[in-house]
Image 1 (cartoon, rainbow, N blue to C red):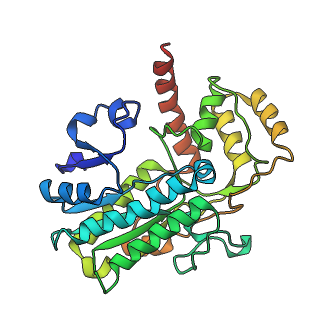
Image 2 (cartoon, rainbow, N blue to C red; image 1 turned 45 degrees about the horizontal axis):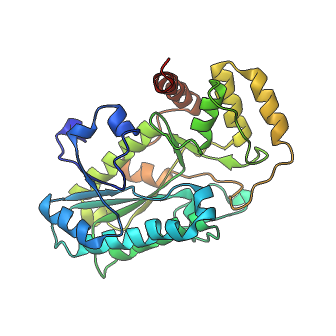
Length: 313
């Protein structure tokens, strides 16, 4: 977006300098406003004062474990935050040209393996706190895209996004890379059999830009649409770790981790998730460009440099 000359305003809860925005030297190229997504008056002021015409709604509490420990704050961020934003946009008049809302595969809830991959017309049947919070935000966005309000909204449901700059080390890929590089010990949270779909962050960015531009240019065609995005390639948690430790060359520690995983069970998480992306491909021509191995190789290179700098080596 910066390369295309866009004027970008970002709402942040904390001005945390340990984020990719600061690490890559981009913070001084965007306007960052500190505040809460649940502050509707603040949002309305930002939209008016900055003359906002396009919104990408990424703000959320994204950690499944945190949602289990603190469902209240998760619901505040992901549900209340979403309807406060939608109301702020609705009250801004008719100048908004595109609104892309980030949802997730977890909004679907748990389906049998034989029903995989998820398709956009599957009913949302979540039961765990994080999944419910994202499904609610998803449906709230759909309400504001309906013929009642007709805001130019598209909902995107992504699988697990990974890549450079992901500093949430509770996620399997950054946690696994940090451990394989010897900075921490990996602590298994399950038996490794859970199956997930993964997509590289550059492929995600490309799709967001594409959807935003298409929605801006042809709102009648895209308003209210829901798009899944993923690779539709299944990988177990165990398989992900095997790839990471193999690429880094630390198979010895991997054997210890696999042994620790045996008979460990998790609660509050869906067993199998895959995303069908046929619809978004039909509408936009998009499909992921990076295989998991390609994406992991680029991601590992980034973490090698980042972790070395952070440790002062």
